[in-house]
Length: 161
Image 1 (tube, rainbow, N blue to C red):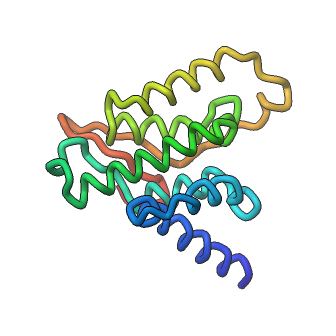
Image 2 (cartoon, rainbow, N blue to C red):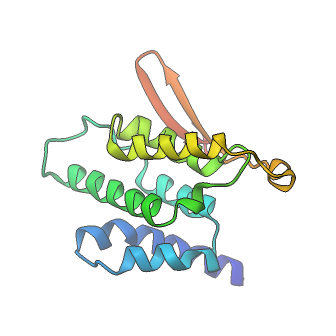
């Protein structure tokens, strides 16, 4: 019962991230990013965020419309997260959260500064020698990027793709 309440509360907090950015609530996102680890994992938050807001195709709408505003808000949230808490994406040896983030950015924000920043972090992390304990901590994010002809997508393995 307690876990269900926590999961529901986490979902509500993640769902509020985009409205907080759009509504000019400047303290919510940084406060959430500094505190969520007390009750959730990076993978849980990333999964909820990507599931809630899904893929936003780069050509989805003209500048200034609701989809464009949501795209900018998502990019701002992910940018703050990567800037302020890069360690959240540093789970060796395969960095599943960073891989999920990169797949999402490649699909929704190809060529963006944030995609380049995430790629540089991945290169930096891969160049480090893993410790023995890190090498044993392999984790799968559950997110898969698919390509069918000219279409691409990002899908969680627990959902039907």
